[in-house]
Length: 104
Image (tube, rainbow, N blue to C red; front, side):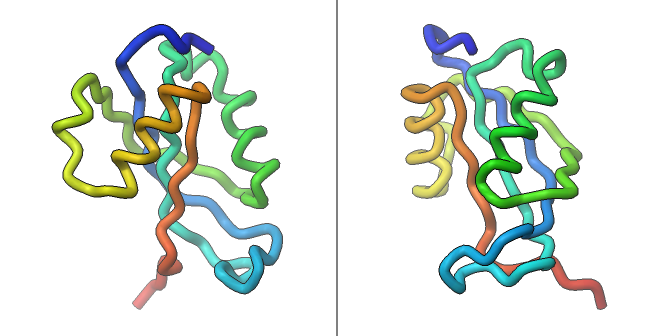
C-alpha cells in the first residue's frame, strides 16, 4: 500500500452481508459500499482489497465505479471525509450504506 500520497481512490459498488453485525445489517442483504484506498495499484491488488472486505463480513463484492480524490474539501459528506482520513492513515477504509439495496 502506498500511504505517502494524498490521493485516495474510491471504489464504489455493493456487497452482500455474510455475518450479522450486532443487528445493524441483516444476513444476506445487499448494501452499497465504498472502499477508499491509497493503493494506486488497486487494480493489481484487487484480491487483497476484496479479502479486506470479506474479513469485515461481506461477500459477493462488486465494484462499478472508481473515482480519484485528491482534495478532501471536494467531499461533502462527513462519513466520506472521516473515511478519507482513515484511508490516508491506514491505507484503506470501508464505508457501508446502512439501508439495504431493494429491488422494486
